[in-house]
Length: 243
Image 1: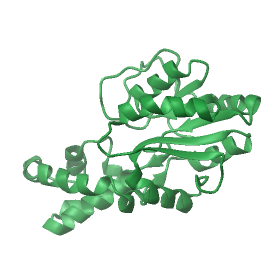
Image 2: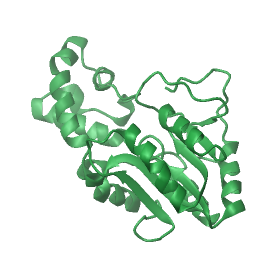
Image 3: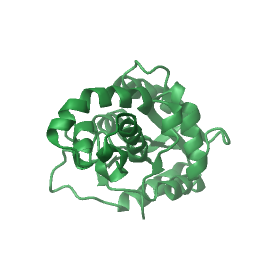
């Protein structure tokens, strides 16, 4: 979970505040959304990969892996949550990680993602408010097809159907998410006035706060890469997009 103060409130009122800001300067307004663990729940993708690994090696506990076995990004922890003994986890963890890595960052598997609660309706509300929607993700371009397939299946506004919806992705897998997000700020400035940004990574939402000090920066309290980064003062957290 994010390293934010216990005194910090999970504040769903910021969703209405962001819509108000979007209306105020529409059609110049831009609302930015990260994807993984912000709009999209990738635990179904994780579960499918782990089940396939279990089927390949005849590991009964992993054949029954479920999305709820993930409470973060640790594959070892997910394997234990699925019922594997610690000794068996240690035996298989490295091979499972390589199997996971070869599949997780692909179009085929990312098309399996689900939506964070309330996310589809909220992104559509942003468009209805007259704003532009920009998906800004650390996924690389080779994942674009599967990402768009998941948008279609789940009902998110399609970046191919409207000039008011953009999907910004890393050009290559090798570029780090941190570097990409930093360079994306210039592109976002070109699109219009960024009035709100939503991201689950403390490092990235802090970056939006610094790059766009007049915008509302909102942290999704789902999961993150578990780096010890504290949210900047004044950044609210929400658990989902349900209003």
